[in-house]
Length: 205
Picture 1 (cartoon, rainbow, N blue to C red):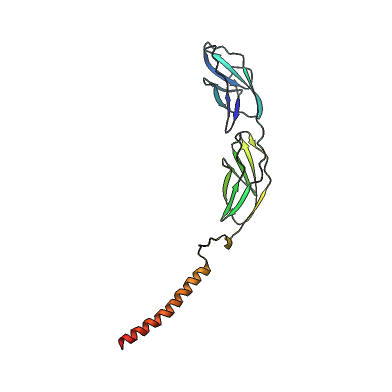
Picture 2: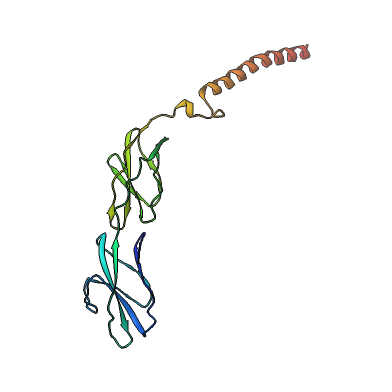
């Protein structure tokens, strides 16, 4: 059995009818040879292996305590190319954009984000990307241990240089509100100051 995630993991049933020294996993049928075809030797019943192709055949040999090799157990595998994701959700932010892709499939490692000419790799399906004002076309693609799958359709996003006043919260400080506070303070001063001067003059008389 082979499972694919961040790595390829091969597993098999334990051999109990003989004393096992170790197991040997290969891509050819020449056990014991120290070549690139030998992927691993282990006393466990599973191990991580490095594979170079999406489709292939593995041979698992049992080596007994006296050094004899068994006939191999054969494991066939076929790792599909990552699926094509749907277009990402892209939202402009102050000084950048927020990108949300579909959830990463369990047999993949992460997401490639293509933002105009830039490429960003991430193991998360969400990305905050810092950028200048402009127009950005964003696509995404899943990748696995063998490579990158097809890119999604593009989503276009416009990043503005200034903050849109409609995005300001009601409690935000605006120039109009500041001007209103200053005008009121001036009016209060103009009203109370003459009264204070008049009261002081009457007291002195």
